[in-house]
Image 1 (cartoon, rainbow, N blue to C red):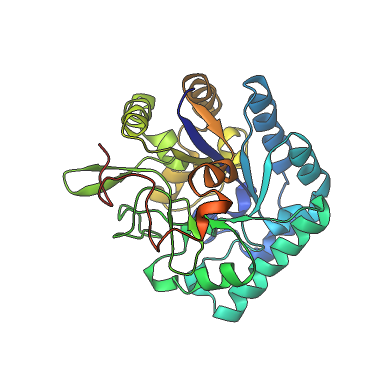
Image 2: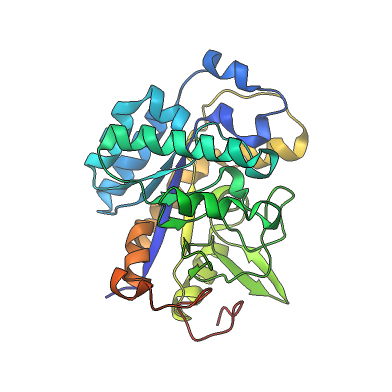
Length: 299
């Protein structure tokens, strides 16, 4: 059997991203063109052609306004997971604000699907050493796993150095599915998708994904529906944010199709079951890795 990897999509619309927040405020959201349904359906059609199931981390704000989309995703056999409600950075909120946001999102999704939501991903991967306390909130709300940790220091908004780049358990029992990185010269280079997938050449991902799999590590990959939408509205933001958000949007769908051709993917919950079976979860010690290698080894 081919090596199985995790694929996920953070379901938010083009106007909700952090890179555009300086020109599009929360109060403007209701006035913006909603394009998330048509863009998510592009992804669903692509996944169906490749007979691949995925995890969809859905923003509660979107689910509240597009419940039929949530049902459509679930009907395709995909995992429904939480991306919070209002797309606020965790470390900019209070403990109670975070709990309220996550609990609200979880409740909306579970009321739509009738199934328990097991996974969570923070907006902009904003569970960092500064906001590690959010992990206890997730555990208390009965999440099985989190996928918010990006073990890199290459971004000004997120990063969590010093943790494993392989799936592991926190001391409170919460399973972490960290975003993929590859260690070169003592630093973890981002390899998980998103803007990196648009900005870096495809061969970068192809080569290092194969190396990760040969080393016994699964890929944890992500994209946003708006990244397949080259016709989305354009707004004037500072140059670095404009590059992060708009460059190579027209190439994303073709690159994603190629990735699905070359690698085998499953929802993140399937990887959780594979590496942390329920029968043996209680026997694992905190921060147990799935490989015998050291914490940051990629070979």
